[in-house]
Amino acid sequence: MSEKKESEANEYGAAPRSDLSLRGVQVFQGWLDGDEQSALVAALREVIRAAPLFSPMTPYGRPMRVRMTSAGRYGWYSDRKGYRYERSHPSGVAWPPIPPQVLRIWAGVTGLARMPDCCLVNFYDAKARMGMHQDRDETDYSYPVVSVSLGDDALFRVGNTTRGGKTESLWLKSGDVLVMGGEARLIYHGIDRVRPGSSTLLPNGGRINLTLRVVD
Ligand code: MD3
Ligand code: FE
Image 1 (tube, helix red, strand yellow):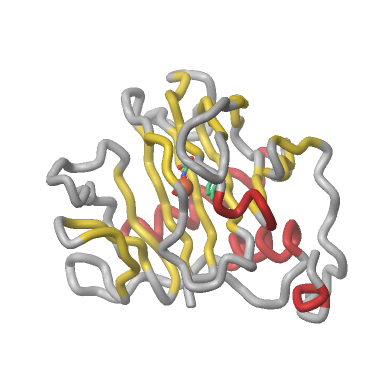
Image 2: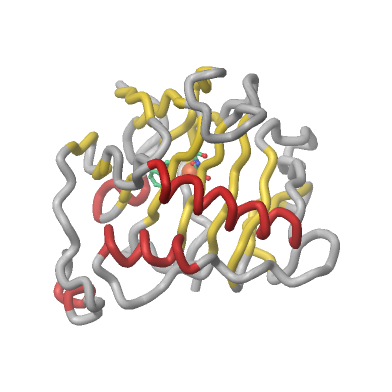
């Protein structure tokens, strides 16, 4: 961690070391136990009740297959005008607050006092995927991005900080947490597919991914 970030350390102290790293992406396998995952799903149901999932339009005019919503001061949004953060849900309501359990995960894996501004909630059905892209709609790339996987397994692919080149893949399981900091912050990444029926966490199946970001 940089000196700036160490001076911002939270009460958990230094960030823990993950047992696995893939091109600079730290992988905390099984960070959440089953009870924590269930409690998180219950909290996310409240988020989705206040701010229902929707399918954003890409700037290219096609709806995304992954359904999304957000919690926090900002929510991620996309339409013909491009990718950006918005202060409210498309319905006009403010995004609900980020659940405290989610903030606890951020604090635990990053060791930072600064909390994220946005918790993007992505829902994948059996056919959803996410093409290779960079996360670069934020102001300060010195803050990491944290991802939390819930429900069905997903095949995660990481590339390089420029488009193309060799890639590596890893199956993400329910309860796994990833931290993308430093060089990995601007790495290309995507989800190739989910494995339907691989988890019983969500009664109707599917996968939820939470992505936590400092926006401004
Ligand atoms: C690597 N989500 O919302 S999570 C996204 O599973 C996104 O829904 C995927 O990519 C998902 O932007 C992948 C893993 C992830 C998230 C953010 C990253 C990997 C990342 C940011 C930088 C580098
Ligand atoms: Fe991403």
